[in-house]
Image (tube, rainbow, N blue to C red; front, side, top):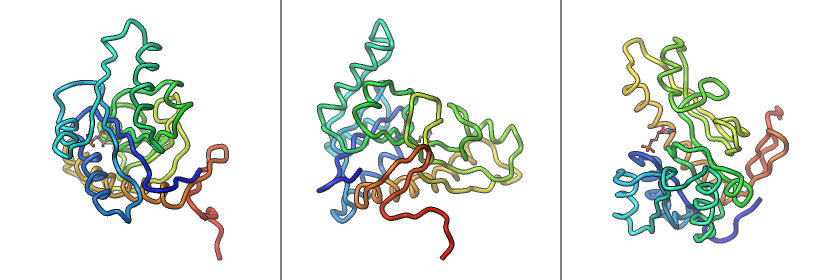
Length: 211
Ligand code: GRF
């Protein structure tokens, strides 16, 4: 898939929105090739929405609890996203699994604070720490209907240090995660990408062959 003109991003958030902020900051430079056209959330009163408002980006909120069924919420959030005609949807700390109405309509990126397939789910940092790993990291994936199970686009390792607690380790990961997410989103919109089974290639990447 290839995006012409500045790629339109809808970013979904549930919390502090520092990944969103990194995308907003990057897209201030027209050469980045993408801009945030809307920010969606599954709850009110979060810093992620405040960041969007300060940047004069339209926002929307769809709460799961406002719908009788998950299927109705799936359809509602897909419709809200569709209003902004995104080239890419970026789930950046959005704590919900998106359903087929969104996944069938748009490519969706998800960022996760662990080296998938290890430690998927809502507590990737805590779980990695509890397991005693010495290296963890972050992963950008193409979202599918599973929990952090989609094809991997990019990963970067982050060391676990002896005195780390969850907060300290997560902050170290997020510093790397924001840079990786900004880099990958920009490259995808500028260079295009292909998906073959579980293998995602950006632009003319040829994979791991030596030259
Ligand atoms: C990120 O580490 C994301 O991977 C995880 O939650 C964090 C969100 O951070 N799911 P922020 O809201 O972008 O600051």
